[in-house]
Structures are given as structure tokens and as C-alpha cells.
Image (cartoon, rainbow, N blue to C red; front, side, top):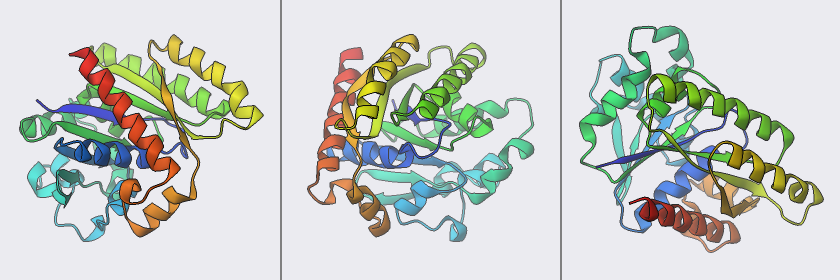
Length: 256
């Protein structure tokens, strides 16, 4: 049975797309069958994977409108990893999808392919809208990538309230897996000062702060430009993400 994990934070620039990609590829490298899903109208995850959504025959937007099946909107990007395509037209999602049950469109769609994958990893937009509501309603868990900054902490608290609403209305078993510090530099005084505050905020949300932190690295920017995964070359950030995937799986196995 497929497990669905959402990467979410309403603040941009916290490495949601990078972490979605690294987690998905990292799981595939360990033998899992993975579906990546792009629910951001910017389609950065699709671009990172080398897929031009503007010329795609079908996207998740078409699936939501009943114009295509989910299989029509899925492409293979490498061994063990498929990609569910986003769409620039998702910018209109909040005004277009107004029907009853609009928060469960994705859950119903993913329900048709539950037996094909071990994990679905979903990238989301930096906003609290209908697409994030769909992702959370379909999810087993949420990972919150976070930079050590005051504004990121504020965004995390707002996201927490949104998650609580989804739990109450649509998905009572939704779990916050953990908070992942990204673009982190433990040598800076500011990052060290905020570390304790992030830890306390995570505990208040009933979750954990991952032991692994992800360093700031030009290698990530280079991998996105080259449309290569972060593990294609040895680097400190690749080591960080490998450690994070291992920590994620340790928690998964511990929950079973």
C-alpha cells in the first residue's frame, strides 16, 4: 500500500522542491518504487526532472477536470521513479475548483494507483490553498522543510493551524513526520540561536526536529540547472540528504 508524504511550508525558499526530489530519489536508490507529484503551479519539480509540462499531453490539472486519467499524467523519469505532472494552470485552482468535495480530488485520484508504488512524495506551493488542502487530505504524513529564520517559524505555525483544519474535516490520521532544517549553517550565531526555538516549535506541533540538517550548497543549484539528482556526485549536501533519507526510513520502520 502506497504511503503519501507531503513536503509543505507556506514560506518560499525553504528547499521544498529540492527536498522532495532528494527524498524521492533517495528512496528509489534504496529499492522503493516512488511517485513524485508536482502540485505547485511553478512546476519547479517537473523542471528539475527535465519535463516540460507546457508540451505534455496531460497533467494533473486535466485529471482534476475529468479530461484525462492519472496514468495519462504520469511519466517515467528514471528506474523506480515516476512523476505526476503539475500544470501552470494550477494558478487558477482556488477559483476553478469550487465543487463539493474539492478537497479530496487528489485522494480519490491517488486511490486508483495505491498498489503501484511504495511512496508518493508531493511537492506543494508556498501558499495555503486548495491544492495544499488536497495534498494534506491525501497524505499519511507531512515533512516541514524550514530555514532557521523568524519568518519561517511564523509560516510553520500558520501551516500547523491549516493542518489542524484538514485533520478535523478530512484526514484525522494525518501526521507531521518532522521538521527538517535546510540551508543550515551551524557556524553562524543566528542559526545556533534559532535552533532551540525551532526545537520547541516542533515539540509544540507534536512532532520532532530531524537530527539531520541540510547545508547550504552551490551543488544543489548546479544539480537543478543540470537537471541531475543531488546524488550524482559526491558532496556534503548529498551526504546530508542521504542521512535524512536514512533517518526518515528509521522512523517509518519504527512505526510499523
